[in-house]
Image (cartoon, rainbow, N blue to C red):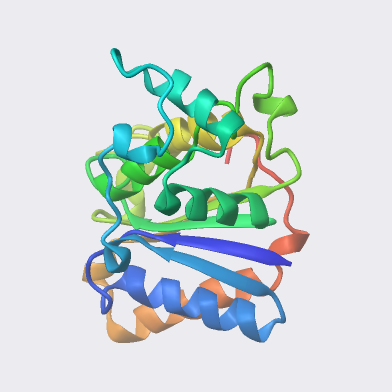
Length: 222
C-alpha cells in the first residue's frame, strides 16, 4: 500500500522525530511504499497567498477559493503545491505526525493544509464528506501532548481530546472524504523514562504493522 507521512516538528531528536522515523522503517520493511513531507526540513512556506499559483483568475481582487478552482482547471498551481497535492492524491493512507500545540497542529502544518487542500481539486461541487474526493483513503493523526492522559479526558484539566481533535478529524479529513482511524497519542513524552519512550515506539510499530486492518472510527466517539 501507499503511505504519505506529513511530519511537523523542528527537532529530529524529539519523540515526534522518533515516531516519524519508526513509521518510515516499519512501513518500508512491511513492503509498503512510503513518501514523506518533512515540513521543517523542507522549509515549507506556510503563508497562503498568490504564491500558491502560477495562474491568475482575478488580478484585481484575491479570493483564494476562486483562484484554486481556476488553477485546478488550468494546471495553475505553483510547483511546491502541485508536488504536495500529488502526494495526497497518490496515497492510500495519510499520517500526520506532530506535537499538539495550543490545542491544534503547529502553524507550518496548518499552512500546509491551507495551501494544499484546494477547492476544485480536493473538494467542491458537492464532493464533500461521504462523497468526498478521498473517500477511498484513510487518515491518521499521530501526536504527542504536553500533559498526561488524565488531562485529556472528559472533565480533565484540558478537556476531552476527541473534542480537541474534532476540527482536524471532521473539518479536514472527513470533509474531504477520508476515513478517520483512531488517533495515536503519546502523552507527556518529556516525562517518560527512556525505557518508557522505547516502549511507546514499539507500540507504534506494532500498530503500524496491522494498520490496514483497522476500521474507521466515528469521529468524537473513540
